[in-house]
Image 1 (cartoon, rainbow, N blue to C red):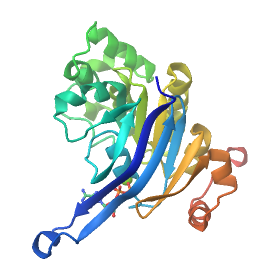
Image 2: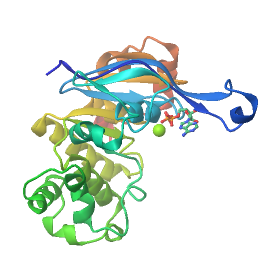
Image 3: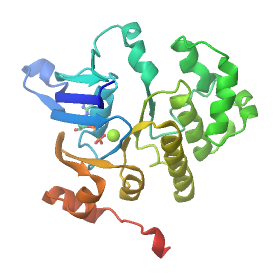
Image 4: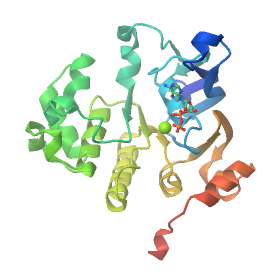
Length: 266
Ligand code: ADP
Ligand code: MG
């Protein structure tokens, strides 16, 4: 096993704008430009940056949910080919899980919670007692096993995000990616889910990649931080260092614009 779970080199994604189909290939939006990233096995890396800076584009490319215009990604030393047929990416799907921001949009309302959570086990052909595993993972995220028979609309936003998290880890991935997984939740629920992420990390040794607006979240959970601006990684390093001694003015402005809640003062 490689020291790095994920390595990206020169990762670039340009989106063609509708106009470019008429006026030639030069009109495009840059989602990500020439990004290099190393994620150490067992580490938790936070990704911060203002809206539109390329955070979601980066994580989608790392998970082969999108195909880079240029550059490459390796997962545990193995090249990731996002343009390959879905079946040949099963190995990557088995080793990764993702939670998105919106716990309302991300769960299929017609499916029972048990089916939603267990779906990766069936889709990825993971053997064993799948129903038992679903019950187990529901308990791991602080829900009751009996909730498997219910439907998403019966749950609050925080509970739905627990369901989404259960689905993301049911197949025991090595890497959990969260794209603003806490942003839609109110403060109390956010703290509970944050604690849950920290527990899962400590217990299962999950490697984490966490996109967040909330510096407090990054500070409490992440060892390393990547700062993004206009599709580029402009600063990265150990969390303490980046948050306390930012080297670039953009990071300083970004940190100043985000209210940091000191738990000691509330
Ligand atoms: P963030 O997650 O940091 O808010 P994104 O990665 O979503 O940023 O977006 C980075 C840039 O790429 C933005 O300018 C955005 O408008 C553009 N972009 C993202 N997705 C698409 C898409 N599917 N089509 C066209 N442009 C996109
Ligand atoms: Mg985003």
